Every structure is written in structure tokens, then in C-alpha cells.
Length: 171
Image (cartoon, rainbow, N blue to C red; front, side):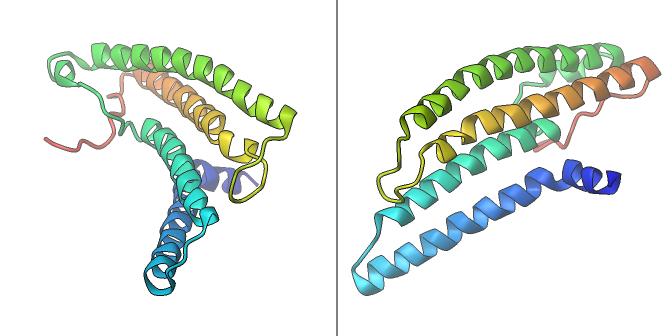
């Protein structure tokens, strides 16, 4: 059973990103063909693309936190030692964790209100809370990945290993 959890931990965001990306591109392709060939389009297709993109963005944010691939200014990291670098990454993770927990709390409010009043989307006519849930789901994933990052950095700091910096876009 632990191998399943390891696979989910290693590739969970990738699989979810793939699902939502395929849904986005497939629906967009179908809608373009329908509009250009048949001169007809649907409101549900536009909604599917929009909501797939929202889930894609929030899951991608969690993936970026996991891989330390989010946008950051790291010029100072080139001039400090490994211990200071680890402390700076830990400080950044703690600050981002506080922001993510606050955002998770407040984003859950809109899902709760939508659930309470049973609001539905205009085109798909299904509960809007399914789509509003993307934001707290994304922040929950970000929070989980920040805790993992914090523990990894703390372990690296204690054992004298260089801190994980992720892949760099430009060198």
C-alpha cells in the first residue's frame, strides 16, 4: 500500500494536470470544430474549458511548490552559504504557508456558501461548488507540499546537506 502512496506523492499533480489539460484541449478542439464547421457552439464547452483551466492553474501551483519551480528572486542565494540558504528557504516556506492557510480558510467560505444555497453553473447546470472547490483544493495541496518542503529543508539543514533548490529556468 505504501508504494501507491509513494506513486501518488511523486506523480499525483502530474496525473491531475494531465487529466485537466486533456479535458481543456479536447473540449476546446471540439468547440472550435463545432463553431467553424457547424456554425454552432455550446455554453457548456466554454464553461468546461474555463473550469479546467482554473483547476489546472491551482494544481500547477502546488506542483511548482513541490519542485521549487515557482517564480522567485534568488540572486541573494548565489552569495550566501549553504546554511543561510537553507534558512532562507525555510523562512520563505513558513511565510508562504501562513498565506496559504489564510487563503485556504477564506476560499472555503465561497464553497460553503455555494453549497448552502445550491447555486449551479449557467451552462452545465451542476453545482457551482464543484468548480469553486478548485481554490481551496489548490491551497490545500500547496499547504501539504509546503509542509513536505519545510521538513525536507529542516532535515537537510540538520544533516549538513545542500538544500534542494529545484530546477532553474535560466543559469
